[in-house]
Image: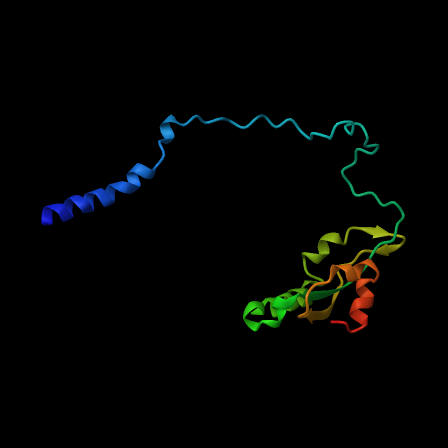
Length: 150
């Protein structure tokens, strides 16, 4: 009986060895050389300006921003699902304004207004109803939030 148990034990121990690949015999194919950017057909010479810098085209800019989180869908009514997701995002948005992350855009200006790291958090909206994307075909998100639909 002990002999059978010992043989079974050795077989079970040797199974992981059979599952391993034989890396010595596998062919290793090197990556092709890096040849620089590859443009879509017909687009290689379409760029007029070869500067890597962002170019201002006299359009409108947002010198500061106001953000709000929208949690929309039937799952947001379940406290087990939401957990700390809403409070965690609220905390992040309350602290991002003026941070080093937000200051990455301070170097830009436009129409005499510098872009700042000012981000104001307007809170969050939660709607537990089903998402109806057809609503956005005729309405704006701002009208949706201000109408108290959430």
